[in-house]
Image (cartoon, rainbow over all chains, first blue to last red):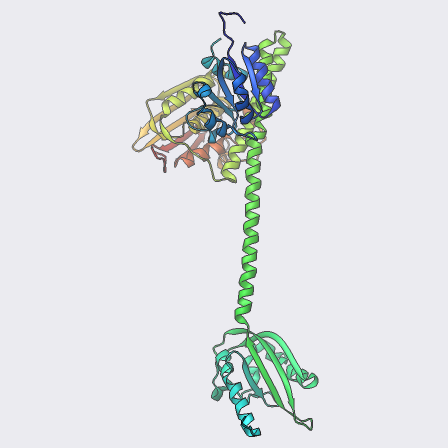
Length: 121
Length: 379
């Protein structure tokens, strides 16, 4: 990393390993730094170690701590208050209000188009 | 202590028996005719002593039992064995049935001569009505539990369709897209494009099955109506389908069509109708989409030229999994053939309707009529 270009970090919160790692590959190949978490609680625990957090991609239906609960807690954290959250879900009917929703399955191009809006490379 | 004489004791006993209210206690002579009657008998069976004394006890039995000799048989058993006991149906004076516990005891003189029978009857109708009600309640409870079990299964099924199948599909979509970006070899690109098309088709099919399940099993399609302009939705659909089908000619004649509807759902409807028109219409002629406001309703038509839809197909065109489904029509659009069924359900959920006109020489027109305000919409 050079001093002039800042690598954006994206936090991917997704309980399905295959999809989680596929999202990591897709985003890393596009030049982003990616931190992954298996569920909401894992994500909250990893937050402190993440720098240059630009975007959270959040699944809703997850064990341990689901996306709704994560979102409710994240909104109270100063470190997350200004970070946009995109919900990536198959339960778009039940998505919380006020967040952008990407319906699963989203295409590779569709994902990158949205991510670049928030984290321009 | 007062010494009681025999006749006094008998008199007291008679008074005691007469005053018992919960049991019918009475005597029959050796031929089965009623010879005494108590308060309980009057209360339970409905006859006064005057009405019943001297009548044969078969008066209390259902005619079918009398006809098959049940009364005589009971007296025979009581005579032979000392007593007869059973629970069974008896008839009250007013003709109503009661479930009774009956004991008939044979009475003999010290020399062994039969002098009659003592009959004690208790009305158990309430008990068996309670038992019957309990059985019905148990059956109702079981039916409710079964219903809950089916509902739980349906919800699980919906969850599998909606979530569990889409996650691997999302992964496949992402992966093919990623590889497609990096692929340079034309053969690899071709294969990846096919994989991507298949994955997109599967995604559409899952969405269709999910919608079918919602309409058929669940609480119906859930709408999220909001103020919108249908013209913009139609334009977006036409742009998308035009890009995907560069050879298609699409003509839109429509001004602003504002109303309160579910934008995503109506996009689904027009995507389906226009997509069908492109797939099945004569490619030499344009597909025409028109929209207008007619009073408190909006009417939008999607028209294509070409051979008409056969009449037998027209009759069931909005049915799911209709006969002949796996023929050319649905195979051509690459779905399950549920599109029109779901479109119709969406429009109906908005309080509207879809009509079809398809005739030789006049092409095919699907006409969507929507009230400008979805019934029950809050805005």
